[in-house]
Image (tube, rainbow, N blue to C red; front, top):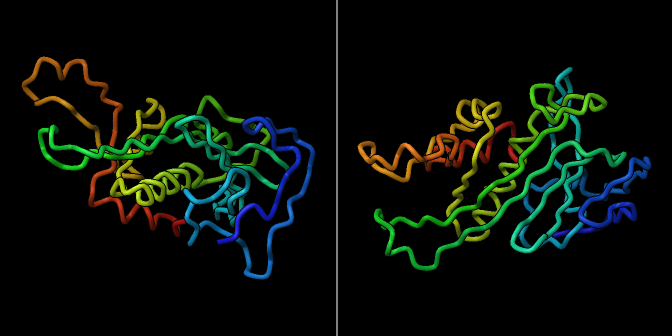
Length: 214
């Protein structure tokens, strides 16, 4: 596995990026270094590889992925070759060693995804109009979370709390479902956040292959 061959001196302090136009030199002897066969958990902080995404106006682009660790959280930033921040996500591995106390006796271990954003898409309040519209950013970040779930022996399970404007994407594209912790007749179900979502088993493999995968 090849990591950190491209060090960017402008990437400092939890990705406090300046738009300097600094170009990275990525290894070309094996083509583009994507995350297809990368053990992401074993990667050190910094540049870990590229992801292939689509442009809304047509064509493809390869964007850079940076990793950072902040206490129990892992942060992943997607950036172009001019250090523009395109998307980001924070994930936390929640591994349960003993789950006999849970009602259904199934392993509840999962990766929780937080702050998943695509700054290039116009349909979000975080839109940066100076960026080209890149598609698949959210999908790739979820695939990174799924890879980390597999690497951490969390069975590929991922969960998140969706924003109202992004819930249709998670529901209709990723095929996540609402997670209810209480029975339908329980009065406590009223307090359940309907935007709490999980990836069901039958949609784990389709997510890993969606739009070509990592």
